[in-house]
Image 1 (cartoon, rainbow, N blue to C red):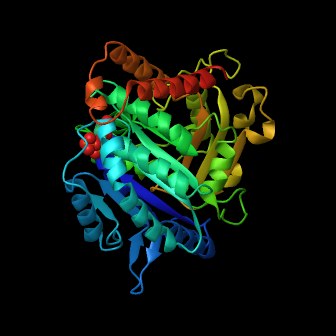
Image 2: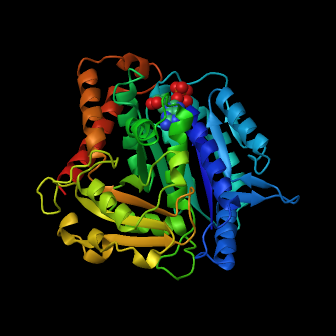
Length: 440
Ligand SMILES: Nc1nc2c(ncn2[C@@H]2O[C@H](COP(=O)(O)OP(=O)(O)OP(=O)(O)O)[C@@H](O)[C@H]2O)c(=O)[nH]1
């Protein structure tokens, strides 16, 4: 079953380019261990190819993607990087550009650019959907802080929900640095999230601060660039979305996105997902490293309960019985690599990790594949619907309220057609989300 990806704004396009490059590298890499049979390997590659790429009559592969930005530069660069790879490219006529960006103004993106460009973008999406034999849903990549990814992204998400009411929709959003690059980033984040919460099935949050720390501290990169961070983000996305089995020797899950969302978002009031993965290390260190599954699963669980997105500096004192643990609604562990029979994920099933009102059968799933990923002999990824995003969302909402109380920069938004009522509605939605998660 196929997914159509929408790359929105600078961040969405840059992450999208890296995501498809990582997918293609994975598809083309050899199975790399004796446990994954030729048959399993071929089935994996075929499934991934048809999920993310369409094959042209000359055998070349095109990403099932629509690219949207209000400036041409980043789209042109992303197209060129793909073309130079020689192994895949973006389809022609699936690029929507204007002449001016949204100036980090959500209202400019949502009310002006979004409304003007909506029909043309939907038309490109429809053409891409029609090329899928079995279409299952959308993956949208965007940041929360700018004006295009966030504003146009929110508008397009709503339009997609209207046009495709029954398809699955996952929005991957990038939180801005907490130090703040964009003065109005907190407004933009609150406005976007409130809209996505109604349109999307789930919002997968990626924290730029955390990505930066993974690159600098765990991978030893000195001057961390967006490209380095996007490599980490695409590794996570690929590990979440590449084919796997529900149990160790089953058939590949066909409706992967549907299965993932149905498990993780069983309660419509709780849609915020976060991801943790292990191991992280420099390319050089990979070849000298070997792991036991317990050496990945134990820290991953501790990262979950102690609410850390990094292995470094985890609070090992936090117990599952602690009152202030990071509560989950649901968790999905995806294990990739050899000796899966030795992997024991039972500790994720402990009832105290979840609210007592939730049936135990809804809380935890394990998916696996014996194929190595990203050059690791064993690799574990945890996708959670937990209280984790509250840690980022709460201060952002507070800062946005403080600015709104003095009406700082609000006129920039009103000039593009937003009104104060719209702000208040968004605050109300986000406050409710925070309240729901905090009371788990
Ligand atoms: N991880 C990551 N973050 C990025 C990247 N590019 C921009 N960002 C973040 O995205 C936010 C800014 O959003 P952009 O995507 O650049 O803006 P835009 O959506 O194109 O909107 P306008 O510039 O207003 O047209 C900031 O928080 C940046 O830190 C990227 O390639 N990777």
